[in-house]
Image 1 (tube, helix red, strand yellow):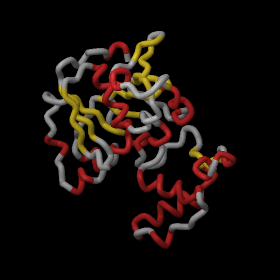
Image 2 (cartoon, rainbow, N blue to C red; image 1 turned 45 degrees about the vertical axis):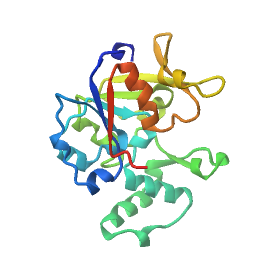
Image 3 (tube, rainbow, N blue to C red; image 1 turned 120 degrees about the vertical axis):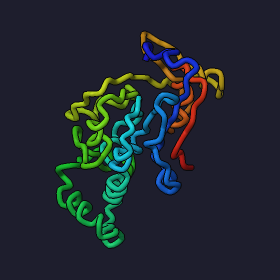
Image 4 (cartoon, one colour; image 1 turned 90 degrees about the horizontal axis):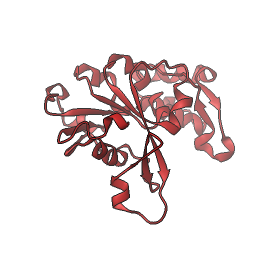
Length: 228
């Protein structure tokens, strides 16, 4: 990340997040002027629909790489497996076939993980798995996009994926003492690595982006599809 420090001084960042408001409001992302904005794409925003806009993002945000193994529907199916709930009767017909395929080939995609730590850790996707139309599956369609990833989480999920995009890493360190806005906005460089000061709230892509993009030099930051 050091090579990105103040590289975009006085420029404008446009962050495309994965919220449904983009489709609800019929926003045409193909009209985004790349000469005015440096475009960041959040992982769950990389969908077949996004590719139809033919907008090549400058950066792809891979803060939690395991979330790139599934799309929104597949993640819902994964959650149903965690609680051993059959949701076939709740699905629209166009989703039933994919659900059956995942259920009938469960051992091909999933493995036991840490069930003693709670239902949410009962299973995980196997390393190297990139389900169809997941962000990992679609990444080859945006080969020029450079990846920004949290180093501590990146190794397990991407084994066997074969990422060809350039990757920049950052780390998060637990900050001592009470919350400091000054420390939050000003990450440190330690041993050649960029380290964000974490206060237990950096599990949100948007919240992590503010100190990262300040470090990169942007004067303004905009969000599309950041639905609360």
